Length: 210
Image (cartoon, rainbow, N blue to C red; front, side):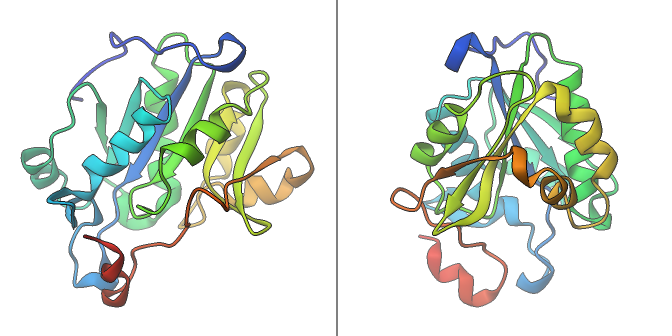
């Protein structure tokens, strides 16, 4: 761990302390095994861009989950002030990374909610983060960005929901099953005008990177 909860979590909407959680463990199987965190974007590793997006969107505290080539990511990427944790089971899918991240957040002090984002979605910028963050109402809040009516990232989970989210995070589904089961409780925040939710999964997708 590169940092701890010594770093303050700035109050957000309703006085809430909303931390950012960046899932950056993917190995880029369809990208020739290049870890997504280290894909070049604007001259720097993609993980740096994703952390900056969370911070500029209002998340002063950011936890980052690494997996594929974690040591190399730590060497090449500059992540000052982040709480960086490794997921040794990253190959089992996104669910394990979400569990590791929520466990890390559970050890932090004074966090009321978490905003979860993915490292391979550079089209989602600070504006979308700020909008979803502003949807916080209580420690049982549940909110997500939507794009043309389709739910996407980032997703906000109030702290009271973390145990159930973690319990259902298996395989590569992340929180998908939990969100489906609680669809009526989700506050959808339209971000279609400020972000594009594409993923960097294939060689063709690399055209989105600069």
